[in-house]
Amino acid sequence: MQEELKKEIEEFRLKAKSYINKEITLKEFKGYSGGFGSYGERGGNSFMLRLRMNQGRLTKDKLKFVIDSAKNYKVKKMHFTTCETIQFHNLDADSTADIMLKALDHDIICRGGGGDYPRNVMANPLSDVEKDTSFDVLPYAKECGKYLIKVMKEYKLPRKLKVVFENSKENITHATFRDLGFIANKNNLFSVYICGGLGQNPKMGVKITDEAKPEEILYYTKAMILTFIENGNYTNRAKARTRYMQETLGVEGLINAYNKNLAKVKNEGNLSINIEEEKIIKIGTKLNELPERVLEQKQENLYTVKFHPLAGDITLNELENIYEAIKDLDAVEVRIGANQNIYIINLSGNEVENVLKVTDFGAKNIFEESVTCVGATICQVGLRDSHSLLLDLIKQFRQEKDLANYLPKINISGCPSSCGTQQIGQIGFQGSFKLVNKVPESAFILSVNGNELLNNEVFGTVLGTILQKDVFDFLFELANILKEKNITFKTYLTNSYAEFINLVNKYI
Image (tube, rainbow, N blue to C red):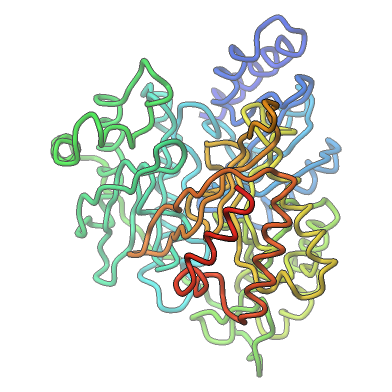
């Protein structure tokens, strides 16, 4: 397979140069390049490249490769995505192809990182270390990722397919509203959800079963592929995602179609897997008290350090410092969360302090852990610069002492695609425009009260459109109200919703 991928990458190199030379259009190149995890950036002279990290695992070897690539190819911008991947930005054609090629030697496959393909398989990044969770889903996500890469060119899908594995009530992978979500239960079986998704016309997933055997996950995966091929929309891309099958088939019809394919693939056989869970064997030392950003693992005397790069961005120097701090530490690795949190796991108590030090550049409060996509200055389909909006808000609130401590995390997307997951944010902003004196101005659609937690999932309620220049003033006034009342935003919505709407109406 590697030789075939290498041949394809050389073809990509030629196609990318044709795009730069304007021999093919943006639309033609996008339709081709997405399958390689690369897109032309706004402006037309550079490329982004998405490095798939199956299960969000960034081993030391992969981390070193990312650092070396950023150095050698002078990568100016690196961004952690909400699909547990790393994006390189502002690359030329040769650098993009070269990094793709070299990534193969480090078990990083960019193929299928975009376009109408199965995407990076996500998993709860703390699956094997977090307390009070069901069984470890990482090895199942790994096998599913390998299977999807193996078969992705056998099938022509209507659109992309996102598969996730979860075992925590936090549900940060959004397993209950993805194209295919597996949730580990306490009885060592999976609940399976299909045909959910964010973006335009978001939908919660449809539960298929609570009793999927772990060894049979690939049957459920193949059944999803076949159901999508048979019933997905190949003529209207706007309605080609799996969630629209809930409308065309109806929920009962969708379940029947899926179960028919599931029975078919089970009868064909040859997809059962046998997993031996990896055991973390490390003798740690105990911390007398837990510092901020440190999580106690289920393994005795082992700990995780969490940090959140502002707006999902990280510099080469910051990555180098992390690598130097962990390169000689036994069993330690980095995990990427779907909420753009980064976790460094399996630290002994005596190893925590230095890792805290080298990750101190990140978010200082919950508000600064806000999530955003890369924004319209880079993304060709972006409507607004969500990325700069968040960074500007953080900068402004840092001048207001502790005021940001009263705000919740917010989620911002530059367009309806919801790469910033605005629809599940307590406060969400979606890039748009607003007519002022018949002139369109930059604006964001405001929504509130979204929730991703397992068994409490709800999409936010859209309240209206707020001018971008007014977003800080709105949040500033809200923060002062919360500070004066000394309550959380969630409590404020519950107890004083009418008062909150009066505040919103001043801005929308």
